[in-house]
Length: 356
Ligand SMILES: Nc1ncnc2c1ncn2[C@@H]1O[C@H](COP(=O)(O)OP(=O)(O)OP(=O)(O)O)[C@@H](O)[C@H]1O
Image (cartoon, rainbow, N blue to C red; front, side):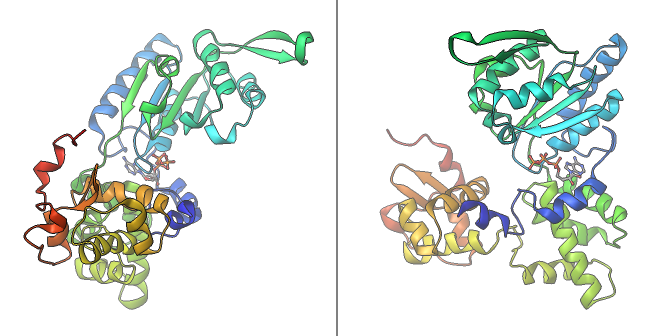
């Protein structure tokens, strides 16, 4: 299934148990230590400074972007910068509106409530949140049926920090209640190099700049992946060498883990390989492609494809999946002149709107 397939990959952006244990030690503690995301950092810094001057809680903050880019880290930084405590929960952890009422009613003044995966809140909990965000009040329903009564409960002022991988999925009434939305972007390789150097220092790993660049290049724009690859390369450097991470050692270590120079792993390459070798570059339907690589269609679609599309290696068209010229080049294969009856698209053509 999708989650298992995602979880055992070295290049998944989702956190595993080891990540959770190490991440606490690697998290930047303030905005100055937080690398990259210049725009969000500047915007957030203004929001926080202004709130501090007013002596008030900052407006509610929504952070949107793919997993592993630092949303949880930023929420902790917001709390640290405000000198406020933080409560961390997530949309799926809140089953009923009553669970949310219990959390909200136990918040202290100025507390930060971090709600990860806010797009996965249940409808009743979401509606309760509207009133809590706007009026710092919730109605607690006591009893059932015609005898049920709503007891209003005042809440202390607090700041909600919502995180979502899909801002577009949030209903507009919820989105509108955030005073500030920070859109997190994938990190540039130079920024990831800085993340890797910082983590190496904290983990007491000796690394040379080219070694860091080699890891950064394969980290899919994501600090969580960069930190994870660094740990695997460190293991290799310590077991097989003297511990120093050079580009050659990073390259050899990541070859052991089947992470290629562009950050593709075994599944990504299996998908591309099938697309090119079995289907001449496509177009081919998702389910056929999934059968060819022995995975669920959902796994191929949600785990492998987003990165392949982002890298300009694969395109989704109304007729099925097709490989780009870059995909042929990446696997060192020569495309047929008319792959699958379609010319092999160059990257620029991927952005033309699909036919109706
Ligand atoms: N800008 C950054 N500078 C340095 N390290 C970072 C940065 N952003 C993230 N990290 C590191 O990456 C790891 C993952 O970050 P974090 O848990 O905040 O991501 P996230 O976006 O909340 O992911 P998820 O949504 O999956 O929980 C942490 O160890 C954190 O230290």
